[in-house]
Image (cartoon, rainbow, N blue to C red; front, top):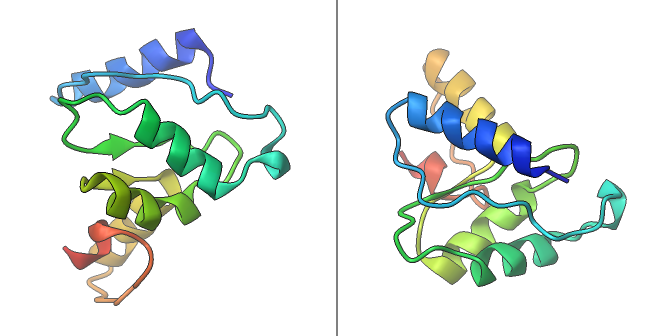
Length: 110
């Protein structure tokens, strides 16, 4: 679970990189990662989405959010980024490897 101080530092990180952060929040989900279902992640984010948000960046923080990316994008119509997804995308780009990774979100279509 992300604590409020972590929310501020996460938001500050992206602001320092030139992004406008319109909201940062901790998901009210179980503290035990094996108890967290991807459907619950998608529902929580969709229900707490700020109207001005053009994209969603989720922190995994010990639980897997990758499975929520594609269903959440379909539900909200905006790009969703997760830590491992972004890392894999960046590694593939750096190695100049083109990979069709269906089911992993719109990031892999770029």
